Length: 461
Image (cartoon, rainbow, N blue to C red; front, side, top):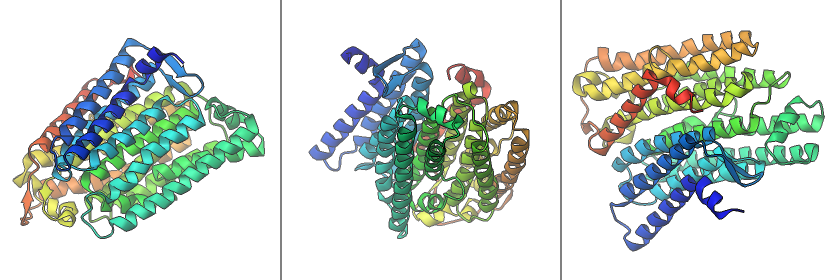
């Protein structure tokens, strides 16, 4: 093991670890210090810059052969995830000015970064657990609703089930191929051996559960609704990004053939249809975003039907557009003393007349999530469906496109509430200010950059 190679290849992870240590020391020294937020932002920002520089330099290496590898696409995926975490940290100040939120979030980000470089099922499992365990606490942390404990327990139990399924699949794969390397999964995809096929189904089922694919989606609406806004944003964007990056690492460039192609297509399409239909009936923003997230998970998993070499590119680009727009909506959401009232869609009526910037930002986010051109969400969906059609699955692509049109209704319904309804005057209703406004502007700048120059990001993946 080369110390220099380890230091360079794991620079983003080392910076996150240093941030965790600094935050813990700060917590011990002064339990009510307001310095936790700037420290967290500095270390996460530094980790993002380090990952971007590694990707730009073309640095490639494997300090732990067979376990951990860094390539330019993996480095840029880390940079993207870490950059998306910065707005979450910024608008978390309204809910967590101090306390345990920041070391927990950095610990979870460490797991996400491991997933992008995992080369074996051992490293992948370690990354998944490091990513997931802090999130169980984040759902409960700073809770404002009595149902938060129930939501956290549901998330814990079902996520534990996914971990057990993943471990069983990895063990069966080892029994079938004699290897725990991620490359063995590609061989199992093409195998006719019952043990190998069972392993593939169990691993894919674990990813479906973690990403809230129908019918494994029951935890997501409750967890998203019960958690605080920053925790919900982190789950909706960063945790989902981690799961899909892990799935992309596992599938690699191996082609997906029948009968697995049917499993990969049917359940994601069911998620697209069910998520969009159910989102129409939700009275709260976070619950609506949860069902929207279920639908978007369906779009992302359809990408695995597509061409192997372009799969990672399509997934990461979609995660970038989906992530920055979700964070823009959460960051721009006006503050309110009552968490339940803040979440109600009815209270966003006439928002343009009272808080025009918030309404414009949320409206832009909704149009992009709906896939309306020229917003970046359109490019993300185009890449996925283009790859699916190019791989010969035109029928599944058409069904997925038709299902995606269902989502336009509830996105436009929210826009209609904000721009075409009289203002709903509510006591305690106040616009987000300070660092939350900074988070909104950061997300807005990112969304404009992706919309104007998508090729710049695509060329790096």
